[in-house]
Amino acid sequence: GNVSVDICFGTLDTSVLGSYTIIYTAIDSCGNTSSMERTVNVIDNISPTIILNPSAITIEASETAYIDDNTNDTISDNYFSFSQLIIDTCSNVVSDVVGTYSVAYTVTDPCGNVANATRIVNVVDTTAPVITISGDNPLYLTQNDIYNEFSANAIDIVDGIVNVDICLGTLNTSVIGNYNIIYSASDSCGNDASSVRIVIVSETPIDLNQNL
Image (tube, rainbow, N blue to C red; front, side):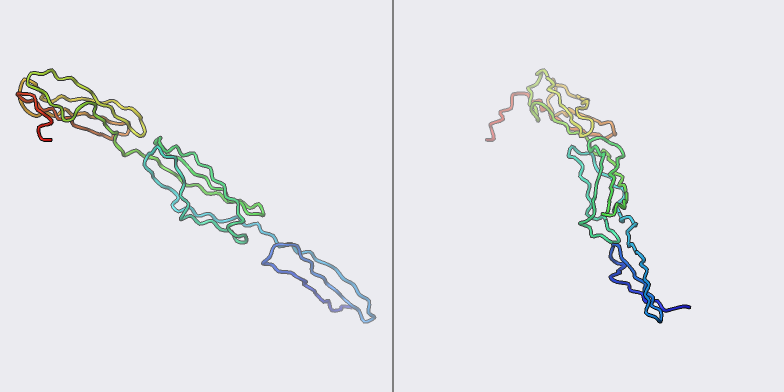
């Protein structure tokens, strides 16, 4: 007939990964004993959690290489500690080229469970070129002198060297007065810059040292 069965759970702990044995033992009235074992494997098949904050960012184009800031990200696992996780990142961000890029995160726990997340990085250019005027500024001329243009150059973070347009305005060295030479430059993103050289035309040469 039916006899009672004693169950020994041993060290079974479902909160700890591992292999455990449960022993079932039955004894009849004559003292005959029979036992069976069940193997219980406690496993982890849950992937880590990745929360990227923010999931998308916009940065200004720069000559400095992009370094992803994960300060506000959350990476965790249901069982293993943060230090036990393997975190890989793959970035294709080119910081001085306007475009949309990504930084991919892959997190693996010791059981081989994998989680993936991607941060979108938008590189934009809202910075105007920097114009450097060659020669003196202000430039002093004596009436009827010939004006020689020393030009200027412009450098943009994204485009590099860009063209500089020069507007002489109303410059007339035969007429005493102050004049503005305007230098203008634009980059491919439509950012504009301008700079001014002041030309001072006087009747007689100006002694630049007279106030020293």
